[in-house]
Length: 104
Image (cartoon, rainbow, N blue to C red; front, side, top):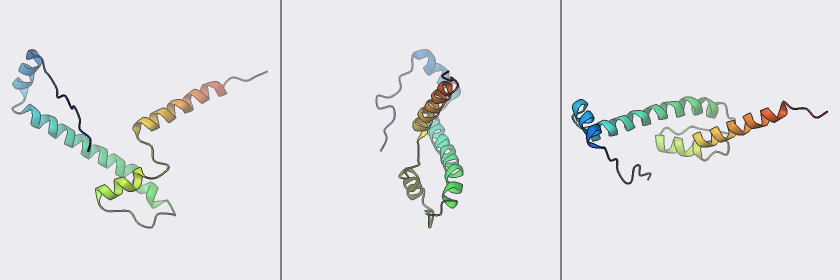
């Protein structure tokens, strides 16, 4: 299990007052924000991978549980997480820059 912010979040007094002015329960607000972002990530994940899996002739069935679906996708050799995608994109951009030069 991933544990975020192991050392907690420390607010200075000014930030604390600003949060207290706006929020009744700042911890609940943070947890709700994380849950909302998780739901958004799940929808993006499904929108990316369901069509890819449906078009893969080697796939017989797609799991219906979130856990099994994520496991199936992330164990595929063609799966890349966000950092891997960015690194790959940067590598491709770097190669493109050098391919513009010709040796005479």
